[in-house]
Length: 276
Image 1 (cartoon, rainbow, N blue to C red):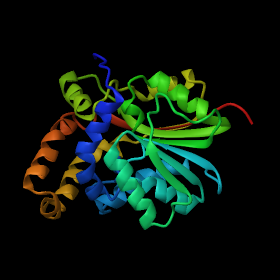
Image 2 (cartoon, rainbow, N blue to C red):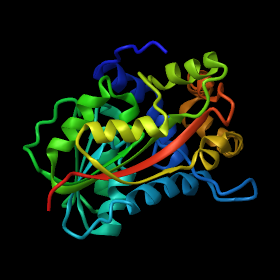
Image 3 (tube, rainbow, N blue to C red):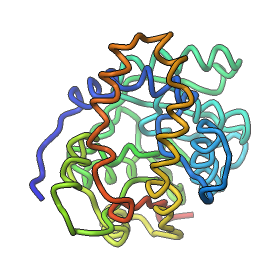
């Protein structure tokens, strides 16, 4: 597949356009959902929060540690980390909407002493070497214009022995590539690695991979459950944002649903920077 360079400004606009309704639907978390089976009746926001917990738990966070939330979205995950693990979180994003919303959320939850949000392009971070004990990246590496460069930069800002955990989409089948291409274009993905390729990317950046899993069937494989859950919120979303905005939001996401559910996986990878 052709790799097209997508710059940070374009990604910021991409999320500025999609995040307001996404924030409302998923309660401040823009990443994917996790349902155990078709009988699982967890509400959408709870199913999305399962991913936050599942990925965060692989980091083994300890009170007082410094965490970089790389691609923090509207801030709910960073607030969750601060309140439940006692860590200090720096959230970065290239979306102005997300920064404003995340700061509002931090104030509302009384965690401004432990959580900060700022514009941050992870291809060139301003933080000194070894600034963080852990990095969390929920579906943000997928938008990297240069994945090797981004992983190397995250490696740099971790202290020796620091950990990174990320979740992202993966390619599970090369059949019907036109469907996959529509998916990638919709999400502004430059590449769509397999699980093996994700692991290799992390290793080339210098990380020692310690854990990985493929949970695609319970994530993208449950896209029909998401559609039903989202439709349950249709009237309230339309009342707040208007029918035209809702129609445009739906139009922008049509390509996301193009692949068969077995074509797109969802990986979680946890790794460590060598050292103490």
